[in-house]
Length: 232
Image 1 (cartoon, rainbow, N blue to C red):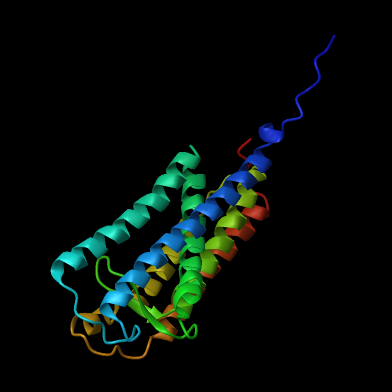
Image 2 (image 1 turned 45 degrees about the vertical axis):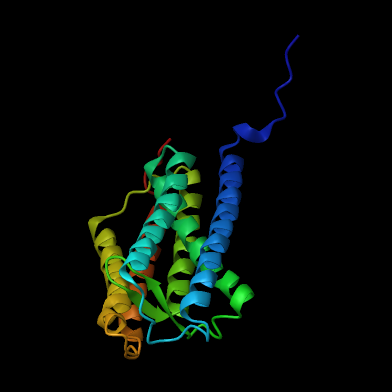
């Protein structure tokens, strides 16, 4: 007598991926809650009248702890991506997806807790490594949305059996775009160190970087979808 096949759907790779994406999203949203809660406490200490530029001075010991907290955040996001898959492309895409979700919900939770930012054009200090990153909230949100969309598109192609191989010019354009976006955030970091108001954000530089990244992604996905060799 033949034994009936198990009804458990865990053998379906697509369903396993969907479960991983769901739980990774839950994890990133929870991490964003934790991160924003820490910022609530910091702002209560350093900005009792509300966060604004120029930034309040912070003692070296606390600044070092903040640097460590940012490093720990990246390690936590990377660590989950590393253990969730053995495939290096999937690890990279899981990291990009979780980073994007975490970054967006960080601002969502701050809005819930502090009714901040008042608008997407409100300025924030985005990162501290290796120098302070500053810019309107809208800018990192745009980057995060692009990371989420891009990672999901590439996940879909990979699960269809497409081998993710891109020509050097696509990589070059993507790296150039990322560098321009990074430059738009860090070009005026000295304003933070000097405790003065930063100059207007260089939207043209940011837009140029995002455009390079989007074009690289679009051309790369298009070439893959048209029929590169399959992994299987």
